[in-house]
Structures are given as structure tokens and as C-alpha cells.
Image (cartoon, rainbow, N blue to C red):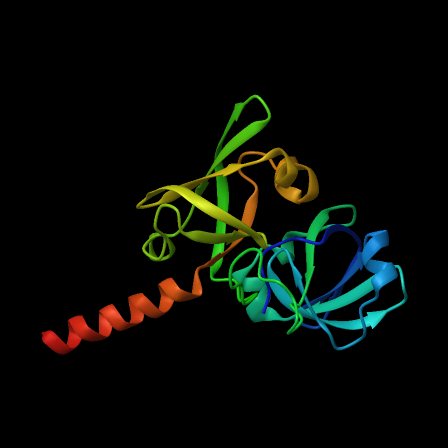
Length: 203
């Protein structure tokens, strides 16, 4: 379980093809390296929960299989790219964002960027099946960043980013057309499941 509060940005060191999957070697930021992350621990990489398979100190290695690559933007990473990193929430930790599983529901892309001083509003295109699980003022994880929805339309949605979020995550460096991982709110999924169940039962 994660919160969507990114702990730092890592940089892709290498992308290695392994059979039908990929090994992603990520240079972790200095503060996370000091705190450490053991082999076997879970880390959200651009919002996708992956297991640390090797740790040389500076470089944390992850493996992504076909299912992960088909549902996320990780397959398009290349050396030098920045990625959002968040370690799993400890039992004693504070939930500052919202419940994020690290199970990406699909990929969207940046449709429009509106700048007003230091503030930025970003519109994202998304599959209609995902926007059905969104409501204004609800939560969405975009590349692992917990954000509050402003406007929701059938095929897109908007969020307002404060300067801090633009500085400490990868979202401030992304351009129109960039793909992003999307995870809708867990509670919205259960509500939709219950609603569909009751509708089918009534019919």
C-alpha cells in the first residue's frame, strides 16, 4: 500500500531486456539511498508496485513482466528518464495522500497544459472506463502522484498542480502527449462494482 506522496525522483540508469520482460536499473535519490531499501521490498515506480530485486546502494533494480508492461508506461522508459519513487507505507506511517495500491489501471496521456503564474492545470486523456470511476474533488494517482480531480469529462479529466508538486515529481517536466500511469480511487472501484451488481440483479 502507498499514499501517492512521492518520496523522490530516480533516474533510469539502464533498461535490460530479459526474455519477455525488462529489468529497470534506477539511480535512487541520495536521501532515499541513505534511508535504504532492502531486496524484496515494494516500491512504487511511476505508481506501479514493483519489487526490488537488487540493490547496489546507488542503483535499485526492478523487473517488469509482460502484464505490467502492457498496462503501464514503463516499457517506454530509456536511460536518463526521471521516475517517481515511493516506498511502501509502513504500518506506523501517516496517510497523507490517499489509498494507492500500486496497481495501475491503464495509461492516459497529457492533453493540455494551462499555466497561470506558478500554478499549472493539466488535462489528461483517459479511457472512458476509468473516468467513470472519477468524481470532481475525488482522488486519482497519476504516475504515482496523489492528486485531486478538478473536472471530469467522459474522456478526460483535469488536476491543478501546486509549485511544490511540480518541483518534486516528474509531472513538472512532462509535455503534451506524454503517457502517464493512472490508478483510480480504490473506493470508487468498489462502489462501481456494487452498483453494477445491484443493477444486474434488478434487471
